[in-house]
Amino acid sequence: MDTLSYKTISANKSTVDKQWLLVDAEGQTLGRLASKVAKILRGKYKTNFTPHVDCGDNVIVINAEKIDMTGNKWDEKEYQRYTGYPGGQRSASAKEVLEKHPERIIENSVKGMLPKNKLGADLFRNLKVYAGVEHGQEAQKPKAINLNDYK
Image (cartoon, rainbow, N blue to C red; front, side, top):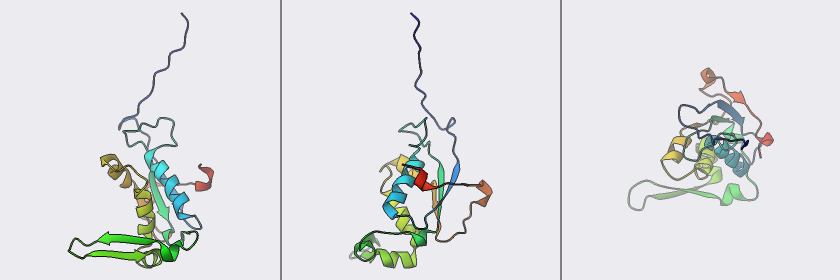
């Protein structure tokens, strides 16, 4: 019998090809940017995607303070945190968080789109977010990408 046989290729830590990608958040909508960055971190845009392996790329996001939100989210969206003490629940609007720590807005939204397990924690470490244009990963020679080219 003359039939073609294909083996399913399963990626592992040693066969994964990781790259450094640079994303500019200026003028991007928060949720759309976060979902695409989460997919890149997970490796879903690669042909050898394997669900239980970190096969995604390292992503650097710059200009976090120039992110956009639709509607009244700047005033109505609240970020909650807990200090660890009784009565220590604190909340801040998106506008307040943007003034103090603009990178946390993108970090929180991307983290919420990653798996809630050890793999998700490892994937989150591959994300670097910076408020301005300067970033500390020039030595990795990141490749600038346009997120509008991704679905």
